[in-house]
Amino acid sequence: MKEIASQTSDDPVVVPRSERRKAVRMHFSWWYALLVLFFALGIGAGYLVWGISPERGNPQAAVEQTTATTDPNSPRAVTRYEVEEDDDPVFGHESAPITIIVFSDYECPYCQRWHNEVWPQLNAAYPDQIRLVYRDFPLYNIHSNAGPAAEAANCAGDQNQYWEFHHLLLSGDNNLGLETYQRYATTLGLDMNLFNDCIESKKYESEVNADYTYAVGLGIQSTPTFFINGIALIGAQPFDAFREVIDLEMAGLLTE
Image (tube, rainbow, N blue to C red):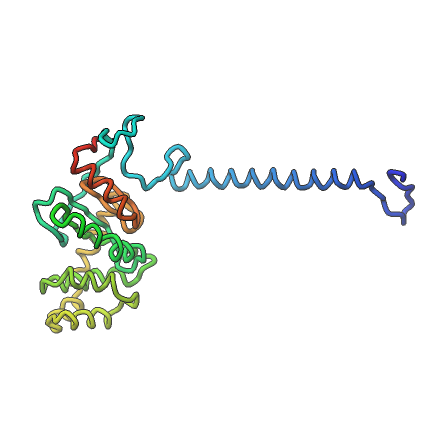
């Protein structure tokens, strides 16, 4: 077989099979190289945008071991943040050694998941050791009902039913709105005239906005965000992630 047939203006070029295979391999090699290049550029852009580098590993990790040993009694290094409780609702004993401050959003599905799955485990495992401080961080740009829901919870708090209302908001349906708040208030036996007046007057709008502004000033960007005695834990982390921090903190093994 000749490698290339003689050509006229109407004759096709005949390329031998070996040359065709070589061309195909070169074609895919170029595409593969381009794919790898774009992937690397994408990862690099991600690091620039989110501030996450390969060396940092899991950005949610709150505790790092300070030595190479796997001794469970070795100290761990942590970063603590000074986070104010303000005058926000507190669940638990004032003398509890562990304070968890959570910045949360009533319309956030991850906040609901944490409340329904993790918080009951924490409350059962550490009934006298932890206290929970709830601070509002409604994501106004994506959750239009989060702010009004937080205001409604504070209105229920005027009648000493904050945590009961809080639980209904996070455990119920996602169809938040005035009718839902009124239904929850009726379920709890609240004085509806006082409750409706509180909501209509927007009594707690500035309070909720103040919590939001404070959280932004701390650099918080997502919900839920937790501070366990000042140690940050981001996202709806599982029970074991909280247990690790709490146990190490109570054992005095967390150092700055």
